[in-house]
Length: 181
Length: 187
Image 1 (cartoon, rainbow over the protein chains, first blue to last red):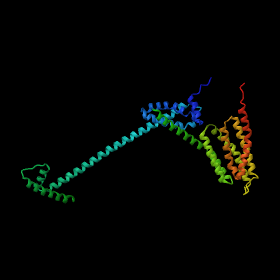
Image 2 (image 1 turned 135 degrees about the vertical axis):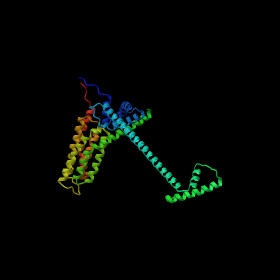
Image 3 (image 1 turned 135 degrees about the horizontal axis):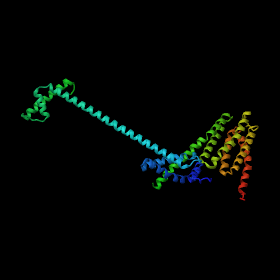
Image 4 (image 1 turned 90 degrees about the vertical axis):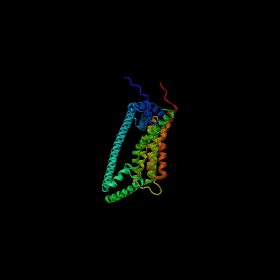
């Protein structure tokens, strides 16, 4: 049986393996398109595919001197390109997982923060109510009227004086109860 | 993809190719590095042996990196160079070289080793019908490897090695020149 004619890429790769740089550009041209197509099929993104094909070709040429001429060059090169694309896919998957985890942690953190704030505010209101409870009925009514902005039936100057006195007494009570302003 | 980007990608691949060849060349020189270490350990003048060893290693890395004929000349060149190296080291062990040099045993050993090395390179070169680069590379590596041992006899040893090698390689070179001038005719 007659031998099959040797593939041109196989011959060129064998020459490149022996250090014949004159065939470099031709080998690059022959390998670029199939590598790019394979990566595009696997990655489904043109920019990523171009980068992956570039990485793959760099690896192929880095190992070109090791090329075993008894084996066909194209499957060998495509195996390297496929491996490179799968590595990129794995990295992409890992990056997505990390991003999802970070988002989850952030949401949890925000929930904890708002619960803390709510608790502090509630404690303050309780403390204020307790301080108010220790005041006289008149003072309490004046402060509530001030809070709700009710002018009541009292004239402005009298109300102002009453309010000032009530606030001063509330402050005093607060200091007595909690030891701070 | 435009041609500029394509050329840039090609350039990056070319750099990777050259670096890959350099890595392989460095790995390929490990056996010669062991030979250099052994000769430095056994010779009476380790400094000069080390200097020639370093030169042989550099030359060998260059040959392997370049590829083609020089790459094919690595093995014959190193094997040929081992002959004067071993001869010189053995002669060196039999007696100690004095301040007047050691022309009594080392120089003849180097000359004889040179002849054998030259003959070996010539036989391999003619059998492979190798080009000029093969002859030059194999001869260069053989001489540098042999010089690691012959440097113990200083200039006399190196001169003996050079003269012996020239005598050994000359018949082969003449034969090659004659064959190139009268190529065989197809019957």
